[in-house]
Structures are given as C-alpha cells and as structure tokens.
Length: 334
View 1 (cartoon, rainbow, N blue to C red):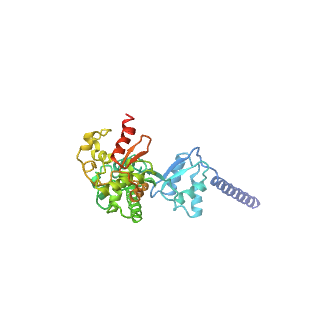
View 2 (view 1 turned 120 degrees about the vertical axis):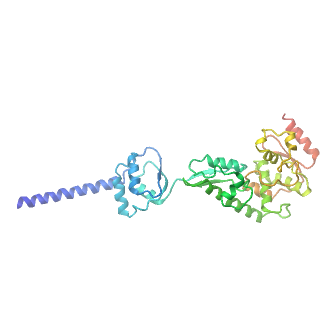
C-alpha cells in the first residue's frame, strides 16, 4: 500500500511538472518572434478559419507551433474573429501580436493614382496595370463606361477626379472609378457654388470643359488663372479659342506628334480653330487648381499667349504683340 501511495504521489508530481512545463512553453512561445527575416504579405481568404491560417503559416515556415496560436485565440474568445484581407507581417511579430493584427482588420492599403491631365483612356490603362485590383472593365467601350458603372449617362471624359485612391486587394476597377466620379462631382459643385460672377459659363459642365483645356495648356498652377482669363475673354468677345490641345484630342490616334497646318484645319468637333465656343466635352481630367482657375480667372486684357520654352508663357493683349512673341519664343528657337 505504501508503495502504491508513493507511486501515485510521484505520478502526480510528474503530471503537475509536465503541465507546468507545457504552460511555461506555451507562454514563452506566445511572445517569441515569428520566423520572419523580412516583411511578408499574407492574405487571409474570405471564410478561412484561424486553423487554416495557422497551418498555412506553419507550412511557409513562419509559425513554428500553430497550436499555440489556436490555444491563445480560444483563450481570448477570438478564434472566429479573424478578418479576411491582405496583411503585412513584419519581423518581430509574435503569435500574440499576429492574432491582434488578424483580428484588427488592419489590412494592407494599395494605391493607384489618376494623374491630372490624363485622358479617361489613360486612367483606365493605369487601373489595368494595377495587379491588386479586380479588373472588370477591360472590354467596355468608352461610350458605355458610365452606364456600366451605374452612373448618369454622358461622355466619360473629364468626369473622374485625378487623385491618389487607396484600396484593399480585391477591390474592383469599378470601385475606384465610382469614387473618382463622385469626388469630381463634389469638387465641381463646391467650386461652381463659389464661382466668380459674370462668367460666360452656363453650367458646371461647361466649367469642367474649360478647366480641362486649362489643365492641358499648362502644368504651372500660378499661370492657370491667367490662361483661364484669356479663354474667358475670348468667349466673351465671340473669338475662337484656338487652343492646340483640343485639336490634338479631336485627332485622336491620327495625331502624329507634331501639329501641322492641315491639322488645325481638320474639321472635328473639338477643333477650336474651326468651331467657336467650347468643345463638346472635356478633353482630359482636370485637377482642383484648373477647376478653380476656370471659375476664378485672372483679370486683364491678354487675349493671346505663347509658350516660352521654360514651362511658362508670354501673354499679349494684341495680335501684333502676340506675333512678336511667337517670333521670339517659337520661331527663334527653331
């Protein structure tokens, strides 16, 4: 009997000691950094269990003991709280902080930039080139683009605000374009509400058209109001706008890289050397500065401007002054 009691006592000690060792190992493992030498992008799939996540990380050599992560999650009641998405795992991350990250939903943010002055076709090409996006608009013609997005009908050119848009992996190109469209609507409405008085622009859309021309004429924000002022005064006087970017847009794929005299005489709806007034639609994606310039043009008498070759322009009030400026800054360079 004494031997039996002693054996049971020893067994109890061994069991208690084993349990203490397991508990100690468990607590140590939770605070031990994962096997990461460099940051790793890891995606938790929709509907995926924590067990599946832990096993995949184990197979990739990142998580040595997946059971410790599972036990910790059950202890905290968070085994079913992991959120789908793409996560950035960094060196120093422990199983504890890994679980906190997966539960937080702090997923990787990707970004795509629509550049001021781009055409809508260039914007679509940028979306196609972004691998983290889900592509759904590859074969949609421009004539049906707004309808495909569930937006009001019209021509899509100029209707998307150029900006940097953040998104999570798996977002669609439609999501980005809808956001860009609504952003443009908001910016244009705010600018239109605060516009200068007496402008020869009847609608916000006409302001958008003019803003797109200003955007294509200069990248210098300090000159945008001056260039807008030239076009506003031309509209008021009934003069043709005679702006090269509209001609180029109208030529489309036929534009060879250099404007020729016959290009200026080609009768397209966008040729402002042929047709008076604004072209029928915007010719690019205008930014906020160009929109504000179109609705707050600089005062003055200038009716002409010519590029000086350094990114700036020379402004003239008369045709004679303009011709001298052209001879100096354009013909002189040739």
